[in-house]
Amino acid sequence: MDLRPETDGHTLTVKVVSSELVKTIYSSNSGELLSRTAECLVGDETGTIIFTARNEQVDLMKPGATVILDNAKIDMFKGRMRLVVDRRGDIEVAKPANFEVREDNNLSLDRYFGTLMINDKWYGL
Image (tube, rainbow, N blue to C red; front, side, top):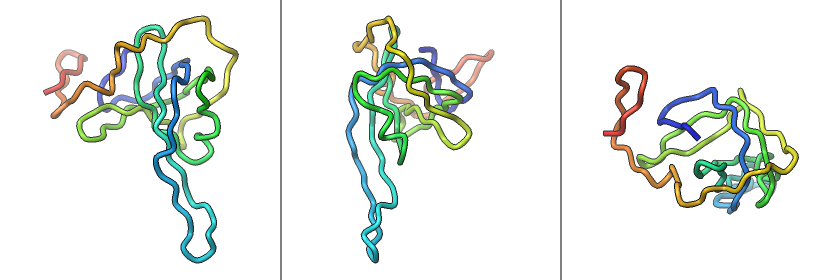
């Protein structure tokens, strides 16, 4: 996983390690479900990162599932990287991948106070 702050256009095949629903919003008038947000730990053989799943994406991000994230991007939240797929991207459930997730390299634990690009390489400040 070669991910850097504020980059996009990533296509990744990852396994879902965990998924936790962190926010659910209902209409105060009708009680209708308006939105859901889950934080999911996803990874491959190089490391893990937190993926923010929204609405129908939450249902696809089941622990143990292998998914293909197409046109994913990196958003920053409190100086830390989060992987997201917005309306320009897609999530597809795939056949189980033949790799073990490297859980000791969580890219979302690194804190960036700013970013700087020098010679096409991102550096955290």
